[in-house]
Image (cartoon, rainbow, N blue to C red; front, side, top):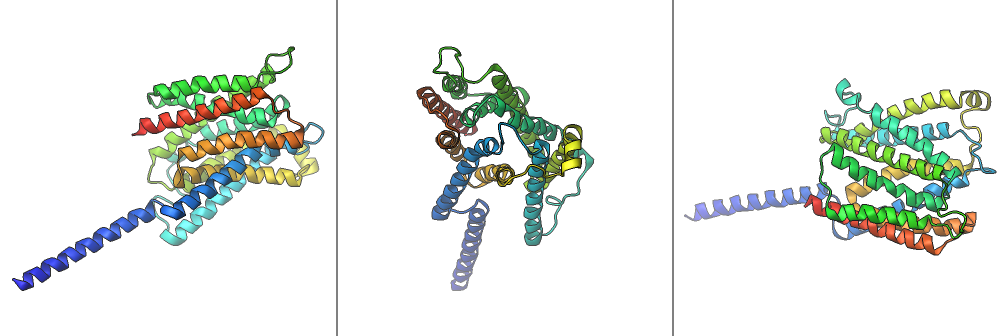
Length: 345
């Protein structure tokens, strides 16, 4: 009897140890907990806020006498090449720690690879428009108008993925439109809106392209959920490099051949390219280590931070309409995030 009690106790101890090991493994897989998690969220939030707020500022700052002295197609190519390199570095670290597996290897089937040219092409056009739009809008206005992609993404989710939008999300869309319009109200009686119609059209086209590319990319990634995200991003960036190479040949071939690939580049241009590459990585880190609310706070703070910096750098006038509009946009982004979280429960 005593022997059986000892045996049962040993069995219980083994089950307890196994349970604790599993819990520890889940905790490790889910990311850092407690104080470390708070620190990481704070770092990621700060990084995303600084990168987002400085993105438009660096593009405007890279201009000389109102025009770009460098080739925007080579700048976009450099961004894609840097993101591709960073993905390879991340994959190399994975291979060293876990070995090369079916899920993290780069070689794959044609059926998986053939879907990446579509979002790569959409991002190419969207990124080119990102430079041209600054002929009609300033950095703070751009930060507000780019939030229109929330509407396009939501509508495309409803159409393509058949996901029903909540009432809170629809209300957020209406508030977003109202906020963007309010922020663009002109104090002058000659024009109702500060941004010309060309700028608004380009902002809407950018929002549609960004939304469709984002939804399409999500469908691709979730089609192979076990695949390493860096391996998937690698193929997306490879096609991005190819399409940007075609754009260089079509638009800036003579300039690149005569003046060189990096002609007109300055320290600000290099910072801008680095910013664009790291912004994508920061968003991925937010989705992995933080949550959607963190992204919302970063976006909201970035809008105001961009406006304040633009006051000192570019003489931007911080009007009451802009402050009210940016506040409404921040509230709408928050409501959309809350509606999305409620929908997932």
